[in-house]
Image (cartoon, rainbow, N blue to C red):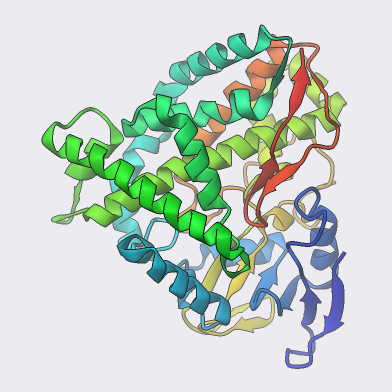
Length: 415
């Protein structure tokens, strides 16, 4: 639990909290701490993170919607951000290349517009038959064994195969993608990341850049109907993407396109196993799958937080954030705010909370949201219908990830 004390150098109505996202048990269940912070210190200063941390829905949404907050976390005037900048320098040109996640307008607008056509609801709707085909294929193979592991056999290969085909890279390389992706995600703790993990992350980025450089060169010589060819040919206001921007976008799409959905399917299935009445309701009423996925995104969405940096004085809920300060929005805490949702600690697949914060909000609302929704709906719905006696073999699975994105490492089941 959090230890809460008054902050000697902070405003009288603000509480300083000792928030340790790496405390034992935090990956498995961070929600008790989130609840305590939301109730006792909804805006608080974390000495460990050198950041203001927000836990109420309205405060978080206000930050995400306000263009006066920058998404470039390296702008923060903290030791944390200085270390981030030093780490980025070690990645070479790739480390200093902005992505859609870390850029502000006009760069963000340009990058997002060049990529967005592949992820529109209509484009994703056209992908549904292929998504269903992949799900049926991997589950047929897994189901024949009588027991299988949801993460390894379904939650990981599904989004990787789909995004690989969209990009135009060989899906058979997905085992390499998994290794690279896990290694890069392990560095998301920033300065809290062990040096050996940072070294492995740099090596993975180098290998990814080399991997994509060959494919990009091939597409320049011989374009195809895929996303990489589209990125090479894309032009916005007379500008094209630089080589480093294409690399960075490919790596972002590959990692974000599989890690988040893999963890969403994992956290969702575990939540359903732990709420058997809701699992049975969804099995009995498959038309609830769309509502159920929105509720699962609210209840156990895999992305738990994101940072912003004020570009000027900004007042929210009576507190003024100063330029250069780090502001960390705990969106997973906001998604369980009782001031916004009735009985937020209860999973209710009929709730359909389409205003949840799992995909963020504002101009950085997740570009891949339609794809993640489609993959989760089809994967979870097919699992429940295909295996009516599906049961979890390990009630207390090991968790992986960081305080930013988390999910179970394995979910062993019997059919």
